[in-house]
Image 1 (cartoon, one colour):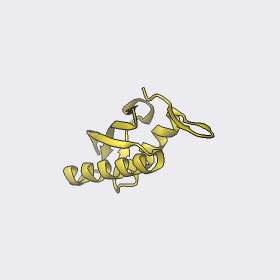
Image 2 (cartoon, rainbow, N blue to C red):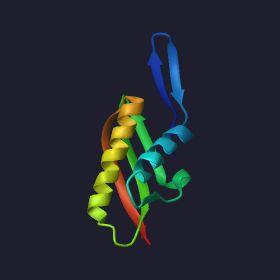
Image 3 (tube, rainbow, N blue to C red):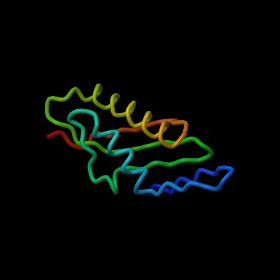
Image 4 (spheres, one colour):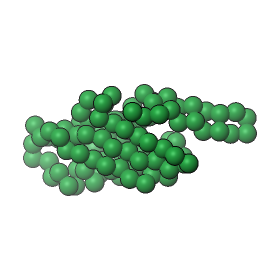
Length: 101
């Protein structure tokens, strides 16, 4: 389960809901050709502590995809999206290929 992200600031705080964080991860992952996040509500977890984040997600990929290259591209896009949008330092993005179809 992803917890909300609270970003404190001098004028107040900004809260990013878990659903928004999940959607950010899904959109970044699925921007890689032939990648699809399986059951986004269940298979995407973003944890964050003290400005650092870790992400794990399950993917389905198309038959014929070069799995290591695709997984690495997903890791890069998810890390960039979460780091840029939320200002978090990304420690890791764990990708599990659960389906080839």
